Image (cartoon, rainbow, N blue to C red; front, side):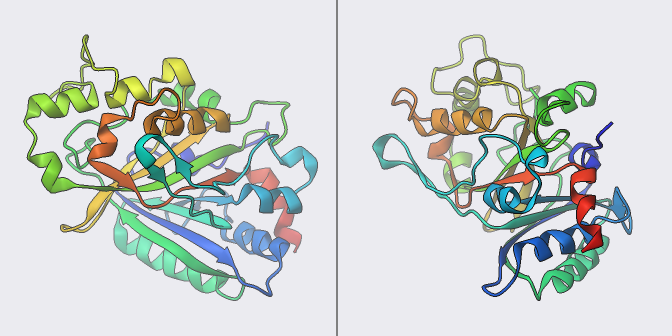
Length: 297
């Protein structure tokens, strides 16, 4: 049986780092994949840190055998332009490392070591670190991930199915969203609940939620299930949400973004008036056997 990168499903970790890399001008794509493959040994952890590695879909498609390359997957190569000129930026990079663990000092040391190892081939283009907030809430104060599948069902949602190209891999959508905390916190709880479409204390879905509420605009019964590993990030003065979404079908992710931006029917997600994306990239997250093919160089 093909083994996925198990860090995708490693819930309960308290510290996270997200490192996105761009290939250097003279560097070889296969050499980068090989270097990342070496970071992934042993299979699941490095010094107690979970590591999930991914690659720009086009880069992976040029390097990997056809059976390891999922069909119809592409990078976030064009910004998404919605109603009223609303935009979601495209900041696609060549590779991503997502590290998670129990304490940030270990994450910090492992991240620095990984950056140093890859430095001859690729430079850091984006970096963020994150941590849990009030157990399971994001920085809007609402519980995040209410509709997430259980770990029992998550693999069926997140991984390319058995027998398909790229089996046991996944497509990752990674976005950094900055919150307008002052504007959001000036709203009454009742208004916030209408924006989200849920009650704030217990995350119960509103029976009469507005059509532009976040829950309505991202209804997974309409667009298909995804597995989210979102986390808060940032500083006291500038902060927000790292959207970390895994799916077996890229279209599930892209359709949700189109709905939020108002491309589907001209109605924007009400939450986008209080938070804005500043990055956007898709990555193929190969299975462990697919990555380990490159350990020979």
